[in-house]
Length: 356
Image 1 (cartoon, helix red, strand yellow):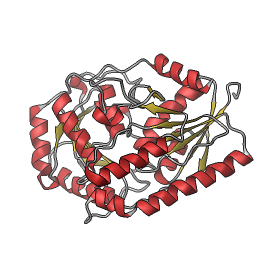
Image 2 (tube, one colour):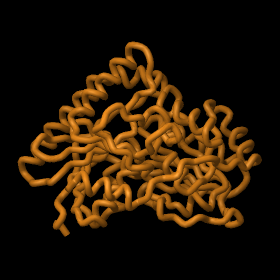
Image 3 (tube, one colour):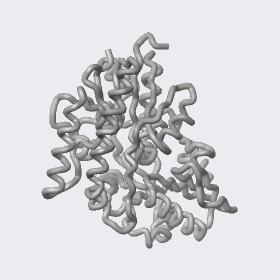
Image 4 (cartoon, rainbow, N blue to C red):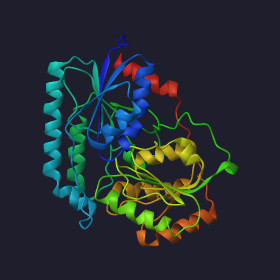
């Protein structure tokens, strides 16, 4: 049905978190009567195609950023600055060509800074309004982000207004062009599961770009082999290099999709502290041991924030992973004081008002 118009939805291809949270808006757009067309790259595009077979999904230029296992994350990203700017320019050229060939009524971009167009309303979905960086490099990066955000008609922040929020200072808007649309979780419709129905001890979710993702997968797998019980390991890749065993069931993107049921029936979740993952855990109020990627300042900031505010466990040293898992399993910590999310109808009302 195209009665309300056609919306191009562009999704960043760094891991699966952006695809996961954008899936909420895709359902919103469909239920509001719009026809979304999805654009992404790599594993994110694969995931979106698999989860939205009824939608048209097209490939856009990817960012193709690679992370070194030896260079600190921020320095690595800084060195790849020219590649990032080139990717944004390639995105813009691609979108200009798409708009020349096909009519769209609006574009929504999840952290794709080149996906905007002056001829149609352009909105960016991001929680990264304020970068958790200091010094001259941080000031330079913040100026670049501010400049990029000004290309869009409005900023959609997946969080709440005020201090009692999910993203801390990251999502605090500095101007009036933004809208808080609440936390976005694909599990928002999941019914609570009673504690006595726990069937899995540890559910490990491996995500992010390679080679860090593959290194983490190997480390987690070797540790799970040493911990008695029943475990799940979800690889954020089309192929899982780790074979299933008697006590570990492994899934790739080609296998069974990660569901709220997998998380709810697990005593403990193990994952990176990416923002999209945190929104999922908050949605179904489950405990997790957070492993911030070393040197990735946003993940380190969020892991510390959620540890202090909401009693989530965190571990900075992977060499202590086994002890960390056993300790958290023994303590049976549960999240506390999580913010109350806005209603689905309120979020959809904001989208409807913006899209017209």
